[in-house]
Image (cartoon, rainbow over all chains, first blue to last red; front, side):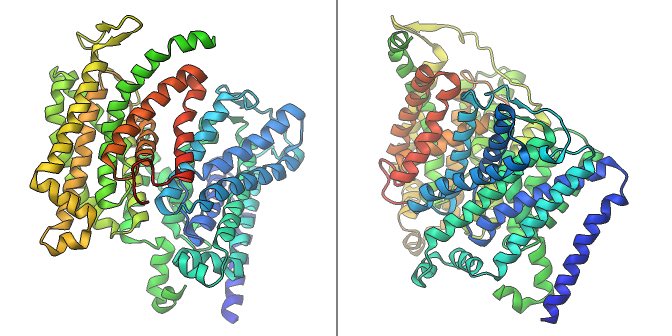
Length: 322
Length: 292
């Protein structure tokens, strides 16, 4: 119990540090990098729930992001619906898409590589659709107007978006914190470790997996609204880019799958590496080469990610049960 | 509009068949690797792109005809595949399905962006002296390269089939595909067979790359286009089935060109991913496969 309490103090201290951090950083560049780190960590956390806890790897996680982004943006551009409410419909849209994709693929027993590939195909399908229909703006894309204000979820300074991303990340950590101590989280872990055994124990694995992908979808939907309001432009290759799908799984795997802080650690490390690499050689593709190498090295030598490597040294026994 | 489309239907089908043979060759490599190693090579598209670049540079620097390059690129691709499995994927993955998927994903990211880094993002094509000559079929023109690639791809599939059924190595590969432990018991070096199979699968890509170069363009993202196509064919035909890869290749080739004709360029691409999803959901064993 004292251990837990220490843990909590530590956590609150870290949160407080992140909250007051902008008062000490005047550089717009660092604020933007930190915003991006929180945003990626948030998306990584959504992937972590399905991939890290339930063990279902998706290669098309971006579809929830893109769909959420389109939901709130189309509502804004066509009906003038304020994004502060639109974000909730984006969340709903993401969850609904999660329900459809999850029901269709888990229902027919797809797992492992097959599940990864079908999510990829769904994202691709949505990209082609978004490119062909008119209400998404097609290939031209959607342009949003810049009108700062809370109802638009747009801010005059980068610090505003910093707090927006920070809030999203705090929420994602709270969700996974709840997951760690809840029955539902334990059921997901049971499915990851041995699905047949979980089923035999009476867990409704289909339902659990669908709930997990719906949570992922809901979180992705909110991220879409954030992105659209920050960058004010959306087109199918951005909304359904495979690179974002890869980044979600990358930060989580690098940091540590199935851990609370894995995605944050991974996002921090990868973005730092990216910025440093860009500082020395600024050519297209280089940072992604480094990402690919890191992914392979982590899979080969640190299957539990950076957090796992750290934990293993400290408490070997606990690690095996954790 | 519709009647105009219908009159072009036979042409679209024949075009689809031409592409289908090459798709089949790409898918054959993928399905072979899956059938023996039970892994999905996510870097398949990226490696195809490398083969296209190899053929491009052989033409660009040494003026070697892409169809002649088949004899050079295919063995090199085979050795490349063998090495990369033997010393890269195999030792790193430790036999876990999802690890291999992620490692080959990492590999595809490295290859794709390595190509971007070294070769730039520009689209490259070759201009062959006979590139614009065509057979007149009465209702359509069929360019020489398409016809040559069609027959070359079929010939390559036949050679592969013969090698698999007639040689000792082919027998060993089939033995490992059927019963891994049994093959080990009778003295087959299973790890070596894995690497050889991976090499053969990549060699198929080497040949396919040379045959595609006169018809397609190449840029670092070319592989992305074909990765889902190849997976769709393999899933459609049944994972591990050689006949399935051939039939699947033709079906997808025709679907793509007829879909493009009826639905237009943009929406026409939807056919591939739609077939992929539907097959996985309703018949994950594919048309000719026996197990998932």
